[in-house]
Image 1 (tube, rainbow, N blue to C red):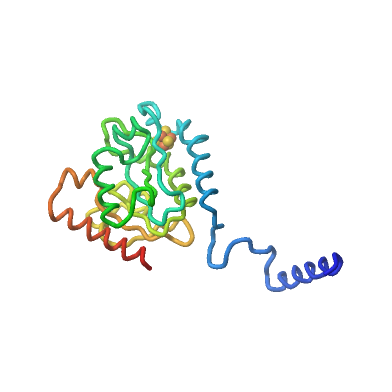
Image 2 (cartoon, rainbow, N blue to C red):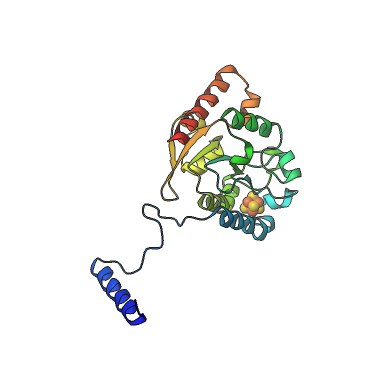
Length: 231
Ligand code: SF4
């Protein structure tokens, strides 16, 4: 096709599109409202957010007491994402999420699911350690929320596991407690398509209340996640 004919064909296509109410050529895959990103693009977008924003962040008072920020880690293309509350002492020292005792338990949970830690992505609602490991206050979670929302948008996991009440409340925009939410499928609706969320107990809570009943509940929640991942 010569240049004139190609130009005429494009003009005709545009006129036809306008007849059907289309003003622009779609750039996203059918059925998706977000552009697909390659693993490399995702990795780069996460690294830039960490290096240029999170590490320098002073949006809330937690910046004063932190040793370092804890952005999150794992496969940038992970199908499964675990989201906890915030860094503890060991995480604050090492700059990595879930590396203390609770992290060891999370690792065991991941292995029991037939996965390796490197295959999932792990992050927290707040990126700086609250003093004395207290629960982050609403002002702190609100200040930090945009980072986590963007991490989810970039990674586009198929399933999210919310570990504990603060993560579940932020992701699901609810005041319902973790005791009622856990074990029931919920939905993270701030991205399209929405992402299924399984709320369960935080590993730190499980360590404090290491009963057979609680362990069975968490394992049952994770089994539901494994079933969902097969679909
Ligand atoms: S917790 Fe989040 S919002 Fe607050 S200073 Fe740290 S990175 Fe910034």
